[in-house]
Image (tube, rainbow, N blue to C red; front, side, top):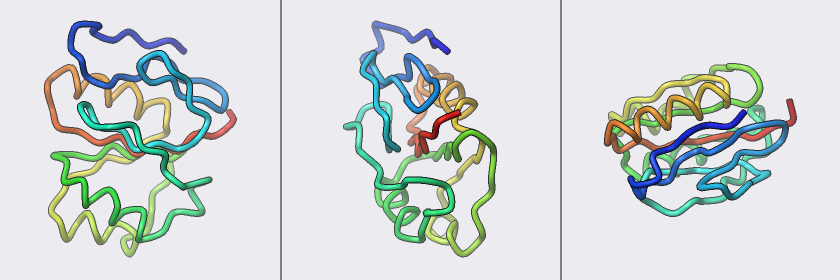
Length: 125
């Protein structure tokens, strides 16, 4: 799937998503990423949804975004409350969806000028 971005915004945007990859600013990545609109693209050491730990959510909270979009892979899955505790304690809003929907939502929010963090698990479809 190709996604359209605003080439004049200067923000990090998702330009494509497919089987085993995400394309950010027209560069493909085959691993999980943490991505903010104006920060660097970070490799996120999460291999799958089942591998998520509290430390992964603490890493997200430390970035202090306005909102976090969590893409859980090929299907929507919900982390347990013990994993989400760092986000709840930091009073950071979050949305959980499959990774394809997370990419679209991230681009919309970035286009609105929101300070959003995308935590994206990349899996083969």
